[in-house]
Amino acid sequence: MAAVDIRDNLLGISWVDSSWIPILNSGSVLDYFSERSNPFYDRTCNNEVVKMQRLTLEHLNQMVGVEYILLHAQEPILFIIRKQQRQSPAQVIPLADYYIIAGVIYQAPDLGSVINSRVLTAVHGIQSAFDEAMSYCRYHPSKGYWWHFKDHEEQDKVKPKAKRKEEPSSIFQRQRVDALLVDLRQKFPPRFVQQKSGEKPVPVDQTKKEAEPIQETVKSEEKETTKNVQQTVSVKGHPEKRMRLHYILSIKIINSY
Image 1 (cartoon, one colour):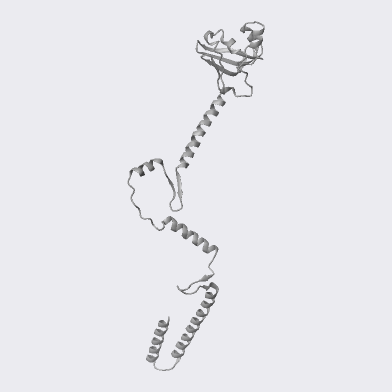
Image 2 (cartoon, helix red, strand yellow):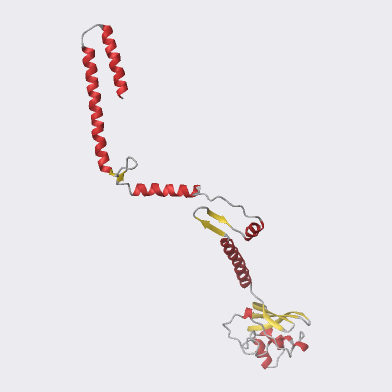
C-alpha cells in the first residue's frame, strides 16, 4: 500500500498485508509492523537501527528515542503494540497504542479523541431532536401556537369529520384587533367626529368650540335663577306666602336641571 501523509488522521485508516497473516505470532509481529508500507511505522525509530545492525531487541533498553514494543499478545487473533519515547533505561513516555486484529492494524484512539467523538454524537442527537420537535410546531393568527403530530393526523383520518360552524372571529382575534385599534388611536387621534349617524363628520376643533358657549349659557341661566330667588325671598310679605314662593321656585329650579 502507498505511504500516507503524516498530516492525515491515522485514527480513520487501517493497514493489512495478507501474506503475513498465516505466520503472525509473538516473535514475528514486530517485523510485520515494521513493514515500509505500514503508515503507522516511524522509520526513524530505534527498532529500525537495531534491525539494520542485526541486534536483538534487548539493546533498545540502552538507547534513547522512539521505539516500538509488544505490549500484549493473544495469539493468533490479537496483538497490542506500543509506541513510546525512552528517556533512560528505567523511564519511558507512552505516545500511542496500536492493536492488530486478524492481521489488520488500527491505531487506538486517545482519551481526548474518545470524549470529542462522544460529545459530537450527543450534540448531533440533541440537535436532530430539536429539529424534529420544531417540525411539529404550527402557528396561525386566529389560533396561536400548537403542536401537530403525525399520530394526530392518523387519528383524524380514522374518525369521521364533523362539520363545524365557522365563527366570524375568535376571542384571540378580537382581543388582538382591539389592542391594535387602541394603539393606533393613541398614535393618530381622529380629526373628524360624526356626532349622529347620517350626519356629515365635523372637525374635532369645531365641536370643542361649540361645547364652550353651551357651558357659558348654562352658567348664566344658573346665575339668573339664583338672582330671581334672592329677589323674591327679599320681598316683604306674609311669612307663609314667602315660604310658598320659596318652595315653588326651588321646584322650578330642580325641574330645569
